[in-house]
Length: 411
Image 1 (cartoon, rainbow, N blue to C red):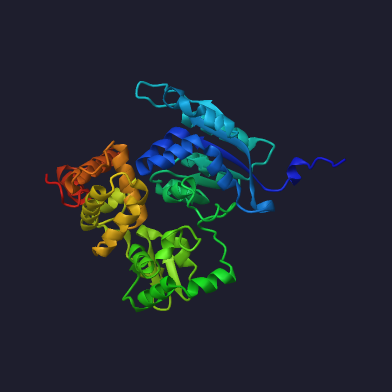
Image 2: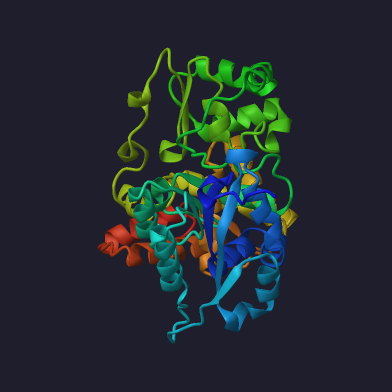
């Protein structure tokens, strides 16, 4: 008769997952309605994908799976989650404004898990709500790994406190079944191990890597990451799937080696370390002088120029007229169009703007003009400034309006 294995000796990373259903579902609906449907109706699929970080000690065992949802709005999804092994906690609205009790219930349960005797090693928070930043800080102070699953723009402080962030487009790929590799257990964007020799050799021989090496080595200074990504994708379209198994551009380009350096600062920069260093990167003040820099620093609005915002809205108008329902690819195609037009922006910047449009309930069909998109986005920026308690005089308000709208709006 085999003896039971003591809890502390069982293989796998002991993990806990806390899902803010309302936040994630709403964010996914703005990005990809079909992905939102799969998230709500087949949680076992993506939860298993997150569990399968590898074999043995690299795999995860979710000892706690909690889902917090508003039963008045989303009760029809309860059965899917209970069948998938989740504990569903009803969080009805407790105020006239419709604010649910998800935050407090999630935090209390997470703190109970942190202080429990099971010894949870990794905490997953599925929410882009920056209100959970303090909770992530508690996990970090207790020396626990933390992973944030986002379906929308993630505040800078919230992102930096977590060990790993599953970005919106990566989560959508998991939901749509297009993610090539599972999310690695306790792997951090800031703590990635070196790739295998086989991958390194294949990557160095690829057309994308050759293009990046030639382009960056001959550039007169550090190059905007979006521009480098565009050159790599043009040379090697196969990278569009998942960047050669690395998931995102930053991870892929930073592991090329050969004196090629990458920094995610201010949207991402790539440079030749033989000629330049991080000190040669432009400061935020140089990229966005004046009142715009203050807004980007406090609200996490992308640090783009007015010309970049204008090009983004023009590209959105054109793409929405072609494929109004194709939200999954919109951030990528708009990013590529801006790069081709000589106004490079990152995919994360486009996703942030799309999420802002969702927050103001702007319909992304085939009808809006660039000016209408700019007006809705500017309204979101003004609300972010108000919430952040930024006080501007009339002239500064006009400057913010002109900058955020890309000059497409008047006074």
